[in-house]
Amino acid sequence: MLRGVRRTTLAATTLLLLLAFAGPPATAHDPDTPEGKTEQAELLRIYEPTWRSGERLAGAPVTCVNGLADKYPCKNVDLLSFLPQSALGGGGSSSMWYWSDTTDSNEYILYCRSNGVSFVNVTDPGNPRYLGNLPSANGVSSSWCDIRTYRNYAYIGKDSVSHGIQIFNLNKLRGVTTPQTFTADARFTGLTNSHTLWINQTTGFLYVSGASTCSKGLTIYDIKTALTLRQVGCYNREVYSHESVVVNYAGPDTRYTGREIAFNFTGQGKRFQILDVTDKANIKVLSSVTHPGASFIHQGFATADYKHMIVNDETISTRGGSPEFVYNIEKLDAARYVGKDVAVRGEFVNHNGYTVGNRHYQAAYRGGLRILDTSSAASAQLPEVGYFDVDPASNASGYSGSWMALPYLKNGVVAVQSIGVGLFLVRPTGAAAVR
Image (cartoon, helix red, strand yellow):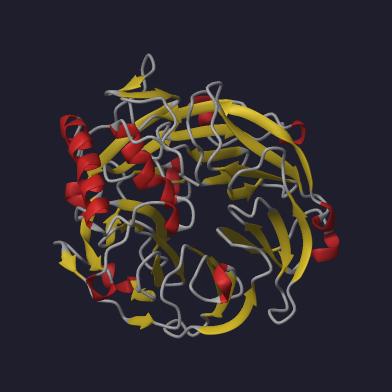
């Protein structure tokens, strides 16, 4: 995928390191080789002065005024706080997830790093508190880490290394006042590496994409007994499963109400699929579609009414903007491509996106958080109503900046991660707030 790239600039070097965050790691230097470590160190050297100069550990919010919140370009998004990578345990960073403790209403961000997972109490988003680190299994390091939660447990996987799945009891976070070094409660070694994870909270099944099992397809585990993973399914009819989002369906196609439906994104396989995974031994392909010029169909998320799917294609960006691809999914067995909208006005590369209400929250690497209005998704119109740019130094395409933005915290707070830089907590306002 990267053949023919001339490494004459730092940008090209950074690209070789970070493009692999999105797809099969074999396409770029492993960051745990000497060459990869050199590239990562250079990236952090460039960014460290930037985040130190803007370091904001606590205090009153910084309002977005005249297009800036502190030094960060913004539109209808205020900065609440920022924790630099040095305050989160160091290393690189990639994915993250959240956990809400139902016993005391505390909220946490679980922040994936190359050498572990950081736990941050974000109940007061203006004063986030780092609680400690869960080191990677066997001390292995990899820039590709993913994490999801089920009930009071976190499940952590890593790609490109023999890590398995760590399982951590999140109840240990209660009452922590000084940073701790935590230990996992269990480790599953029935697989070595994995790329992305998803858990259906209703059914208690873990969906693992890009793992060493199942020909890097979609491997399904029963985790209803939280510390035990039992494989119950495998879908390997595509070259790869990069990511899947799985729900108990309650959308407009009433033929499938209550069925367990997986929206599967096949990366270099260039397909967006809808799978009926209710019967794990007999997985059915309901739709398998693509869009013109597809390159790496990375991830997507449905609109709130489940009539449309907003899909990002990670290796596509243009000088006019970064396109989002819209599919009609009103009939699960007849999904169809509707069109694209170059909603993000910059030469950014889109990564993970999630929808709440009629707002789609897109992590766009060097473009940071971009917020799109999904009200006109039927006509593939996704106007940008807000943004918070975590990388003020660059508006070009590239694979530094924001990997993930999570819009699931209370009071409209959004967590925005920046690779190797740190964790931003922001709040959309005005037209960018959920309608």
